[in-house]
Length: 247
Image (tube, rainbow, N blue to C red; front, side, top):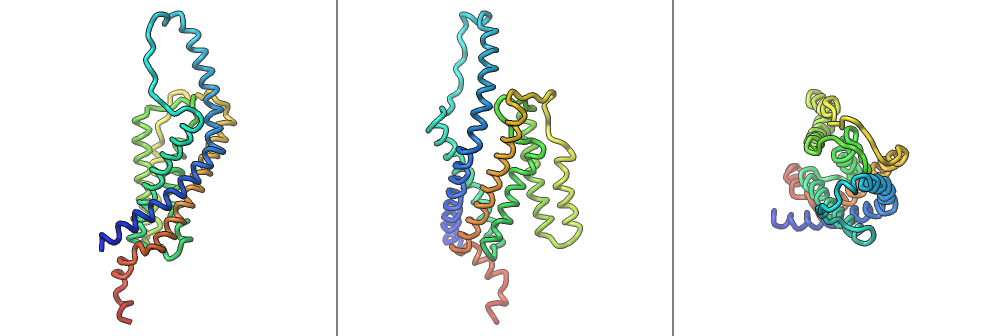
């Protein structure tokens, strides 16, 4: 039984992940990436000015080689698409695995699962750590990673208790879990500064939020439709209601 289920999960997650990833990449290329490139011009100008001031002091010294990064153009586009596909297939696998336990009655329910994924992996963490443009000061990386991971975990558990439980106490606990990382507060830099104008930062946050929302809605609906099409969760649904087989 498990051997028959695994290929269906892989196929469903693979197709839905690729579809959502390509849509996200298109929105990033047309909307998000131009904002990043514009912000990088401010960062480059600041770096050039700093290098000019210290040029005499560092004359005759070798500069360490910078790590490789994709150049603007096809390299950057290919890197964006590749990372999106890997990420989206991973998220789609999580959703499809959830459908094995609770099969959606229709593809529209996938919007709800997509909204949950958006809340867990983007909206809740962004309340404390909003998307940042290049040239923006940030708190310690390790502290931010711990807070992000903790926020994702407690948000997922909180939403599960709030919407998948009917008793009041678990639902109350779920609501408290949703609030807990924001009451604790995300790590912040000692002094918040940004080289890019504030208006550009606002545009970037809005573009990131909307593109990720579309990504998760498409991922949820397509993965739910494919799970139904490929019969993911049929076995558990039959086991969960044996009385249906006996009239």
